[in-house]
Structures are given as structure tokens and as C-alpha cells.
Length: 248
Image 1 (cartoon, rainbow, N blue to C red):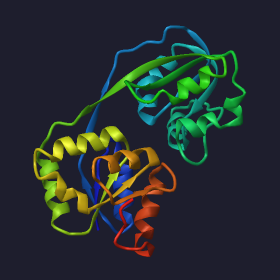
Image 2: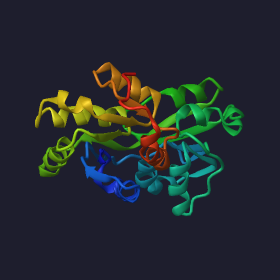
Image 3: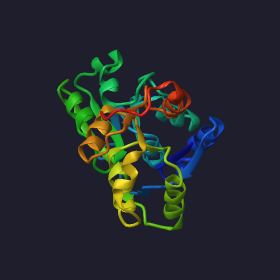
Image 4: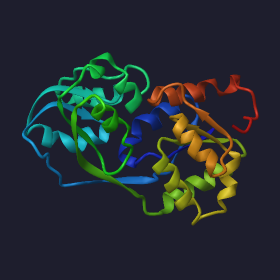
């Protein structure tokens, strides 16, 4: 089955390989590209630093090396692994789903009070983590080390859409609301966007599902967890699911 992958090209190779090994055909459709931001932290020392994504690690490590800190947290296992690969010790991270909510639910994070905390992230995004930490009487700052921008339309986008539309069965993988917005923006320049609504969308969270439903995409499944294994588990088990997928 064709599987449209919407991650940036520099970050899709591992998932692309896993999709291929699962017996499906990956189609690359990069919706976003990441541009580094020349940023710096306001202080030279923080009690706690938190990395919100692997992109934050990639673009933020050089800043981390210029400061001191007592504890370091990651939003999930993939981000934690990225830190470990760069010889950075992690104090804790959610073992299951990666999200601000699961990070805030950790006992080690619940016990953070009256701390100075620096969050490494991309420009924009949710305020859930910061607000949760502020409620615990912490002082929280951001250092935004990259920005997401829509990918320029190119021949790869046209080719991948042509292959997807060549079959009535296919899957579109969406990993963020920004990615979905860009998918619609790019695809609308190539075809009637309603042609994509017959395909199943596999998304990483209920929040993304709510958004895609709101713009008319009704065939949606949420992965059991927010890493690549969650995506592959959906692909592997699709044959056991009731078909067609009922509008959500």
C-alpha cells in the first residue's frame, strides 16, 4: 500500500525504511522545512533544561554547551535518544507517548518547584508545558532555535501525489497540525484537495485528529504512541481493522 510521508526530507529516512520493511511503499511529500535560528539563552545557568523535540536537540546543543544546569528532561523517547547519541545525560522522559502532558505527569517533573527552567523548542507552538510549569511556581523561559516554514512545491510533490492517486487505497501520515496545513496548501496547487479525502490519515494525537476532522478529513486513525513504532503498528495491523474506516 502507498504511504505518503510528510516529514522533512532530512528526518524521514528511518521511517521511510521502516515503512518499506513493513511491506508498504513510502512516498515522500515533505510539507515543511526547518530553518535554524541564531538564538541564545538569557542566562548562563538554569536549574532545569527541557528539549521539546529532536529538532530542538539538533539546533540547540551548541547553546546547551555554553551553560550550566542541574537537570535535563526530554519530551519523549526519540528526543531522549537524540540527546544520548550526543553524549548528553538525561534525567527523565516519558516512556510511552511523547507530549507536554505526559512530561508534566512525570513525578520527577511534578516535584519541580521554584526552579529556573529553559525550554528548547521551535518558534511558535503550544504553551501547555510552560503554563504547567509556571503553575508549580517555576520561572520558565524559551530559547527558540529553529522555525518551520512550508516547503516549496517541486517535482517530488507532484510525483508522489500521482502515485498515491493511482490507487484507491493509500495512507497519509501526518505528524503535526502545521504539517497538515502545509499538505493542504501544497496539494491545492496541484489538484482538487477533495481527492485526498478518500484516503486514511494516520496521525499522532487526538489534537491532530480534531484538527483534520474540522477541515473535512473524516477517515482518521490515531497511533497508539507518538513514535515511529506507533505508525508502523497501525500499518501492520490495518488488515485486522474494520474497513472502510468509519467517519470519526
